[in-house]
Amino acid sequence: MTRPDLLELLRSKCAELSQAAVARAIGYSDGAVSQALNGKYQGSLDNLLARVEEVWGGVSVDCPGLGYEISLAKCGEWRRKPFAATNPQRVAMFRACQKCDKGGTK
Image 1 (cartoon, rainbow, N blue to C red):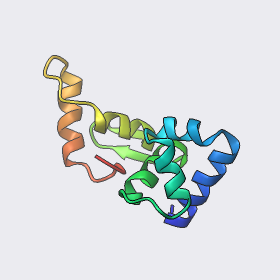
Image 2 (image 1 turned 45 degrees about the horizontal axis):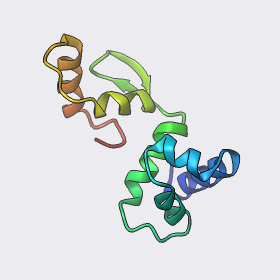
Image 3 (image 1 turned 90 degrees about the horizontal axis):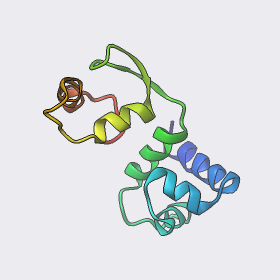
Image 4 (image 1 turned 180 degrees about the vertical axis):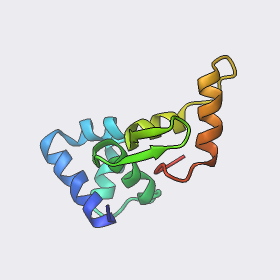
């Protein structure tokens, strides 16, 4: 999706839910969402919009670690998990995610 499309998706989700609910869902503050909508966000707007796409974009990616297609939201969950040497799947996915360029944010 393009940046204007993602901003419109953010606006529509804020109208549908609430700005506070949207902020919680994407892991940002209410103020950050408000600033993004008003064109005054000083942080990385691309990162914020990547989270919007991850949560509500409906995009799927082919996961090389799992070997099948998963939602971008599930991809993001895997990418944010810390390394855990106690679980072989987590070790394999951590390594696969480090090499993968398909996810929106690291």
